[in-house]
Length: 97
Image 1 (cartoon, rainbow, N blue to C red):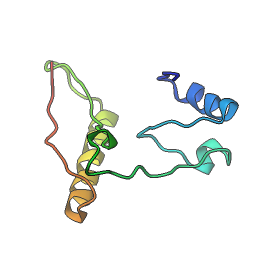
Image 2: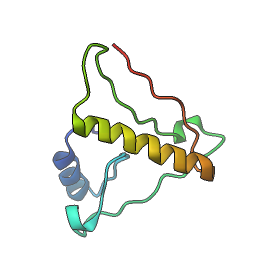
Image 3: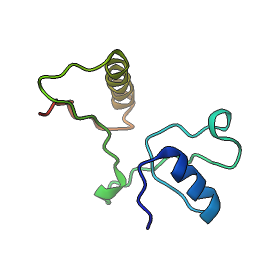
Image 4: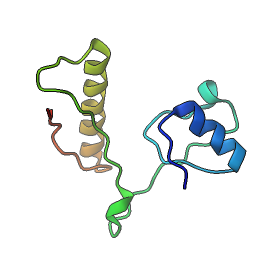
């Protein structure tokens, strides 16, 4: 197993090792070329490890940037849409310190 937190590095490792990654990011031909294929993760009710949690951490005394606020708003909008469709279960976002 290789652990990586850099998008460019992981994409290069995937090609070089014929590997795969689990991510919450965008993998598309326009951005990354045709060497990659995004396969949606299927939730398995019997396996709690099949669920990916996405969130953010911010200090209580800090303010999110404009792009940070947009990210959180988009996450909330996506969760509302998918929760109504029954695709995901959502928990309330919380700000930690």
